[in-house]
Image (tube, rainbow, N blue to C red; front, side):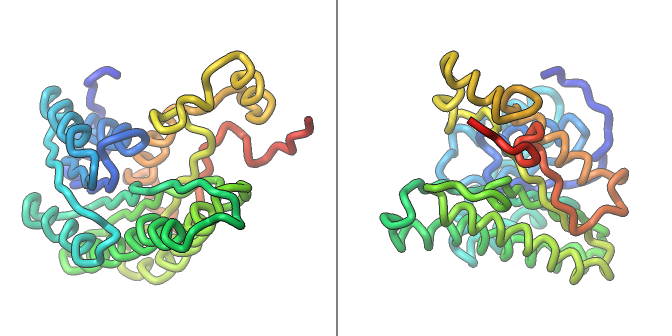
Length: 261
């Protein structure tokens, strides 16, 4: 990607959880190229997060990587507090961090269920609550963006906790949007479909896989992380100031097409 900056997020501090890899990485890089100050939250992917931090700094942007385990309410709140301490303000929160635990419904463990809900739903709630308090205190008409999934609308056979967490996240988006509207804070979800990231790269390898995705996705192929990042940047920008409680689907038409074998 080119280092060109258009400035749509100039003067804004953007906190992205799970900012070191995949969609989170793309969001951080695109936000920085739109002149935002970027804070990357990460848990286990320190090397990746520091790499993104340095990439942003290399093209003249401002970035800071902060470690936090958002399964912990204390650490989730601390992540927001440390962002404020370092940058002095918080204008945009992107709840992107997520875990995926696959198993059939009958074999799904309570441990995997609890971890998935903690990271994908409880963590975003706590981060959003803390961010909204800070925005209100600083009289910032901020943005909260939740990275959801079409799995919150359409069920997988082996991702019951993930799908439940994303459906819950979309309803949290709507509830928070209503609650925070009087403060001028907007809350929206971005719901990716099949996006090509490192975690799922095997699903897109081979002629058979390509044919399958072409049949399932009307636009003919899986998306790129930058497709999701572009939606996030739009919703974080002043252009989206009158949009709240919305669930924006980025899936190439996958969720509106009935697939027949």
